[in-house]
Image (tube, rainbow, N blue to C red; front, side, top):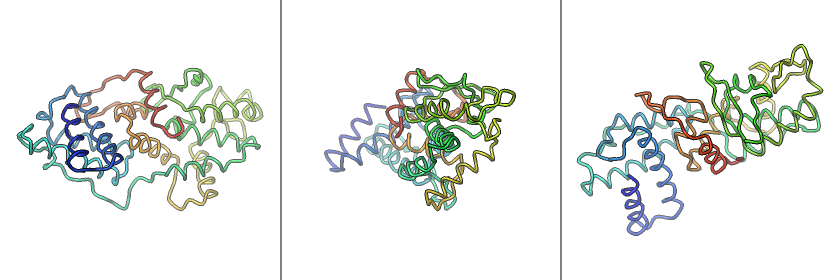
Length: 296
């Protein structure tokens, strides 16, 4: 597949005279599909059908990628297969049987990098709760955690020297997730300066993020923290803790990260409707996170 992609990109550059940025965007989008197909042991474009392509787009949707971005993926992939078909590399164009993503008004809300930064800068880190809140926001965005995963984090789940954390996800499935240097810095500050002031032996139970009474934070507690700083940042769109998870996935994918690596970071075990699951090397996932996450 990579040979065909290289040929196609050369045509775009030499014959279509497209810009470097546009060609890079095409490359990232089509590479995401190729990585998806590789995970299913498919490397012959003639074996790709509309069911596989639909499965790929369903995965993009589940990862929180906006329909606008999915539409761009569709356009890139359509152009690629149209090229293969017109040059008789394949007998039929599978994209013709795939409906393009609909641009709906009810898109999952995704924060821009500027909005993320403005929210992260709002907590007063000189205050014990403000420092805790900075750590919470940093970890939500750095690791793409569900709220239940965040509030369940234990100190024994933090492996900062290895730049990973252990997360207990849905169905009590454990996974290891990379954590960037910024989130490590602020979580360490919180653990050193704030948590000792909040902790109470009988209640704290080794939990990382505590409420003002020394107990584990509730889901609603995290919701209120996010809502407070979103309002303080003057952001008008609807934002909740899961928005950070959507933004995490979207920013990684739009930066060119491997779909399967993002899938594993989020704890989505099934990458296709056939439920084929391939384990990715932990070092590779860390490399993808460091390379493509804006705060990696």
